[in-house]
Image (cartoon, rainbow, N blue to C red; front, top):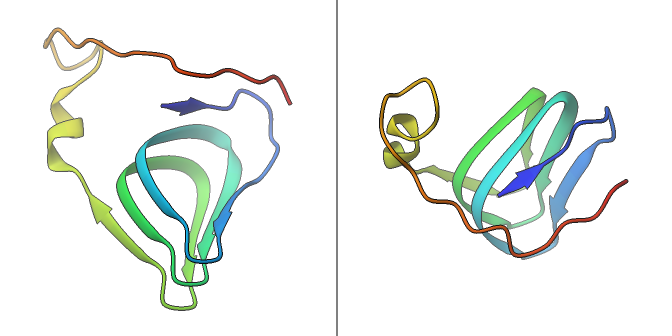
Length: 81
């Protein structure tokens, strides 16, 4: 899970494979150049370009504090930008 609280843009590009979720409501998310994205993204603007593919994980719609479901999340890495 990537959580971005600033307005810095998010870029995933160049044949990357991303599995997870991005929460960046103040940012632009640019997913491009043959990226395979599996999960979900929340951003002010989302651009999917140049043969990138987003595969939305419907199970993520039922996870979180507003869903009433209990969810376990494991934070693997954190970096302030």
